[in-house]
Length: 284
Length: 276
Image 1 (cartoon, one colour):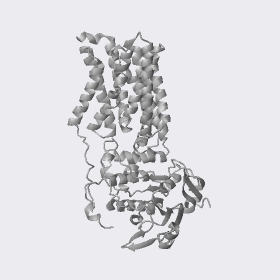
Image 2 (cartoon, rainbow over the protein chains, first blue to last red; image 1 turned 30 degrees about the vertical axis):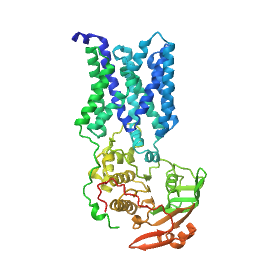
Image 3 (cartoon, each protein chain N blue to C red; image 1 turned 90 degrees about the vertical axis):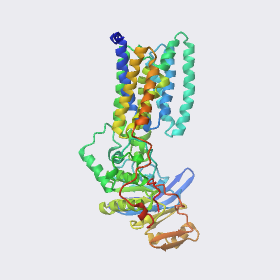
Image 4 (cartoon, one colour; image 1 turned 60 degrees about the vertical axis):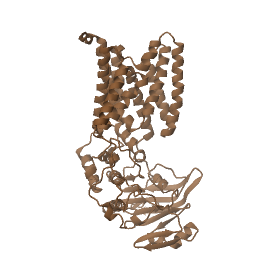
């Protein structure tokens, strides 16, 4: 069994998996902060159309994924900031793009395995080129996040005051969608378009059960994503069951454990110490 | 009239219409530096819109406004802003200290490496509003009154010469209302800062107010409390008989809609049912 570790594909898978987990773990807290789970799902589904289109045109799948999700990110950004409107917009674009993806795959009948790997990932098939590509895309995503992180947090938590302070709220919204598109591109390779939520949201949700300290949330989110991804790859290598079964399983497992054991509950607001509202309340 | 050096805000024939609705017309006034100006008026009178004009977020339909002799501009570091109360998700991983810090450098790009000097300024602002003890608690877990103090600290941390407050007393119980008014009027007096304070209830701010700007029915009146909030002046503004009663240091206005509290339940997240 140990002999499996001699194969380069296992090493490639683990390195690409680690890169993905770090990127996803860092992006995920912003997704939950901005309540953009639906946006992640939307970008992933649009990237399905992009990947299928790339297969049809005999281009690398990553080019299709990145191109389509970038276009979608700019489109969603242009369609406006109001969440409700945006949800409807995403819904319509999704249905259209999924349909287009299905059309491409039908036209290009020969490779139904391509469809399978777009939908569910192909981490055990990545080569050294894929690893380099994931590292470059991931580094750009993290670099961009480092630049926009602070104003993005401000704009996410308090859009009105941020706007008044000169923060470009709408531009940031689009920039973040672009970062998300990069993260989706990296993640699709590991887990496929159908399951990106498991790495781009769940780790942050789990981390927020353990702590609400902003730095620690990101740290835990990265560690949880790493654990689920690398653990999933290792288990898949030993059992020959799919990676896309193990990663969401570990991700969900971590959430359930955190939910049962975690210190953060949806508590009532903390009782403020040091005043006596009852006695002052009626004087006025 | 633009800029006497001691003029914080000047407005000349300022008129604002949103869509086809005119909010106020021909607003002409000056606010001297260091004044505590209360803006009163019914819901929909354009009080928040006036603040948005001063923040550079909303353009006038006609006329002009100047802040320190210049047109308002978005992101002016000399202007602090306390926005209307908005509930914060209790599961947000954002500490009280973070919220205040945004007022200092939240608009800056790049990784956040806080210097000791900026940390000290944040601590000072927290002390100013007495929020030091819950500075490291997630904001969503704090009561409405505690959150509101943090928002005031956020507005004050950059030492603004002009402080714009939009209904900062909304959803606070009387204890917190008094505390918030004290903190803002303290800033006003000790730092000589100008304050524009939008509210629909004059009573909690009576001890601090210098003048009142009343916006109602597209008209306006500006002056000391005793000049503006009188039966005569209000009756003229509303074209209807209005009575003003003074009772135990409070003003009660009858017959004029000032957007008064109408038994709005106190949402102050203090929420332990301790309201008397």
